[in-house]
Image (tube, rainbow over all chains, first blue to last red; front, top):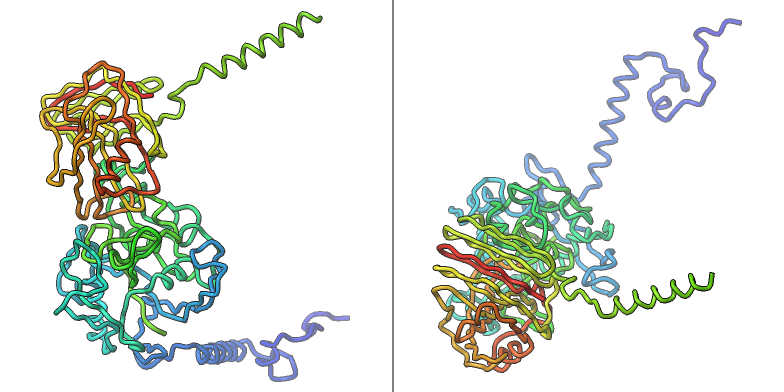
Length: 322
Length: 210
């Protein structure tokens, strides 16, 4: 019996069923290819329609109608902490959905909004450094206005904030929130730790993105000319020309966020408070940077810095309501 | 064979006794040497608690031996067989505490400049000598927690500790003095060392800590 040319006795695949003309029989390679392309495009359109991002011309808009650069901001799905060893684990604390910057604010971004660059280290893709909490707040509002968003903060510079207990803050601006505004803002400390810990995708790491600090962060040991060993000391750091590094070069975390541990410390919205320190003295800084000891890069480490303070290891990333 | 058992028992007893009394007091001492690379600094990590350092050309360094985890109750012993400089340098107990962040110094000896700050907080008599207490604030300066504005506690001996003498720093007394003077104290102690901090011009030191 001749076997050549006999049809396969297997059941045709879904692809074969769609792209064949006679009950599973593939009759033409060219027609098959055209059909295949059609199927793939149709599938892509179907999937794209389910996304929360509507494509509108050359811009993408988020759910609040603002301009969203999908390669710069990440939508963080809210919920309770999946990470088991965070400061908020095991409790009922839940985070709402929010957007957060994939990267620390860069010098290029900062200069485009503020018109000048205070950073000690210079480079377009380096995180901006040497910015105070007040300056970060102003950046958020200015950028919102530039992008047609509603500013998230009200800033009153005419009188000292009675809640501000600092003995060294020369500004003491009163900064309040426009609830529901869609503009740029600082993440809250809760949001920061939630995002750094990987949100609902958390794998329980010690640092943001992993357990080995050198894989996921620029820190005092690896951010200079030579790898530094031994105990922390600023003298050896200075001798090693430690500095900030371009954003996004280390391993991202579970949510695709870069440099949450290390590079520059990141301002958060909140006043710092604990059993020893009363609220109103310092603002929260998280994530550590290239200067401090490695334990300050841990997801759960709570740092503090006076709001008017500036440092070459101090920057921030932005957030927005979802 | 009985004598072998007796010998073994005797040897074990001797070993046990030796272990009880031959305590290596400096077994837990760490060596610290930090420099910003200026000038010339030659720091030698000697055996046990001994170290030496010589420097020239406006070096910025700290060299010493001590403990990775500081303690407010520690009694620090040392002998400086040599400490001389024609510039600015200190022989001191140096360390950090957290919560709040405080850098502290107990200065035992110095070169041509005895450290003082504008914020004098009184004088106390500790370990057979008078010490002046000073407080200072460092703005936007490097610290183990990155750039910080942090406080400094100083105890500075009114007269230089004699070279070659077996010396004691009862840290608990200084901590109490700082507390009584309204100076801050952290609840988490970081490294704590008996060190040489320098220094302008040139100098040399040889120290044993225990």
